[in-house]
Amino acid sequence: MPEGATGKPALGLDPAELAQFETAFVAFADGIGLRGAEIHAGLMKGLTIGETLGITPERLEAIYALASRHLAAGHHEKARRLFGALALFAPDAHAHWFGLALAERAAGRPERAAAVLKTVERLRPDWAPLHFQRLELAVERGDRAGARDALRSFRTASAEDVTDYMRGRIAKIAPALEGKAADRKNG
Image (cartoon, rainbow, N blue to C red):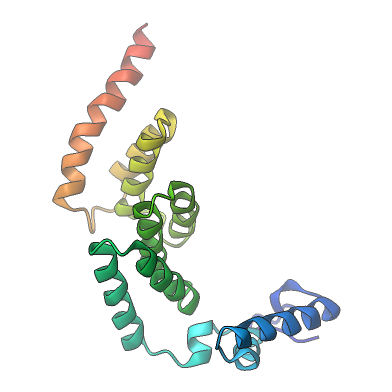
């Protein structure tokens, strides 16, 4: 049975499932212009798609910069596609997933943004910008308990990458969340 780099059965599939996966994956990848057989072989060795395709860190940085520019310019769909590709090419890079979450949110898809943020949380659980986005999404949904949880997490997270904008928003949001919580305890 083919094994990944970890010595476990590749992708956790038995040989028959693996053969079906290979056939379907190669056909799909070839159909969208990627080198399906080559990517599949890399995946079976435990490589990422980006590693298999030979995408250098410099190219990843260039794609990231382009995706960020599209996001800032309001080209949400272009940003979403680029950040999505980055997440496939380098799936352990929290910034790529975070960019994808921001693009999903900017495009009006908060449920998708929240789902993507779970990956960011798995990769970098103590990162304040992650919890700030969780807070904003919870506030937008009217989820007070989720907002309070995100606020607590934000406050205990690493202050690295916290912006003045985040501090200002927290200063406005926190009293409302804390005041309501105190009112409920007293009343």
